[in-house]
Length: 321
Image 1 (cartoon, rainbow, N blue to C red):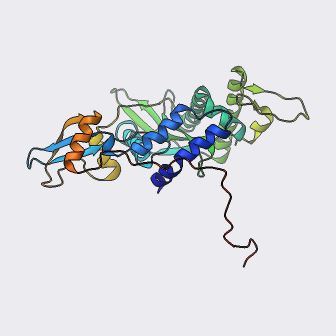
Image 2: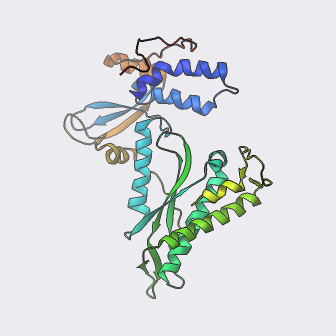
Image 3: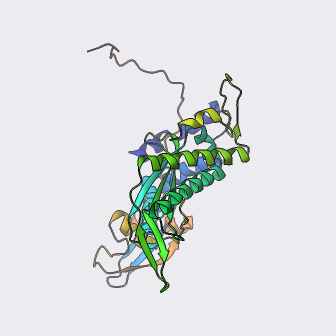
């Protein structure tokens, strides 16, 4: 359904933005739409996978690998990160999720300035770690967390916030050179309020120090610029040591764990296939697809329509009951 909507209305949307927007859409936005429409289409190139057992060949189309628009590629990215955390990062200990939501005046600034997102993430996780060490009461122990910034809300609105997965305890080095985990007692409402207050105070100092915060005189009207927020609105804002990043999983393994099927399993004999070649040259792609009787050209897109159409009255009265 989404693919059909984009294919039907993309040209009209782009024409309207050129006509009425103050500035053109960024190139990466247009490229994301174009790549999405080519995602999974063998007309744009493919891998040739071959089964040695029954000599069967399978063509696997390329994906767009974008996370903002394509549901399939977005799901693979999310699953890839989840696999890395579960299999390679998070130890087998209790964890707790913490959430930090930024006030709306700060969301646009954070979306435009990666340094702001990084600072808020770091401050939040450091305060979670400080509380966890205090609750555990083990001298010299350390804890860890993984922060996951999210840029949008449930209605795809701009809503920068953070989901932080934190170990619910601390790690202590043993005399034998190992590590022992000590679970921390549950935090109270006062503990959570303390974290919120310390995050707010540290965030204000960081924003002021980096020139993103302006204090307005009493009674002045708040005017928020893209790189400034008001001190007055920060009152509504009610890191562990570990930030992990690891290499991506093998393509076929990721597809199996995300969608539940093995792309390298032969559909005829169930044997294991191997990738023979990557086909990207348009003449070669067309020659192979024509030989197989498969569409060799991208699906056509609907042309741009006049956006100044008049709404048709279908005869439904607003007060009809």
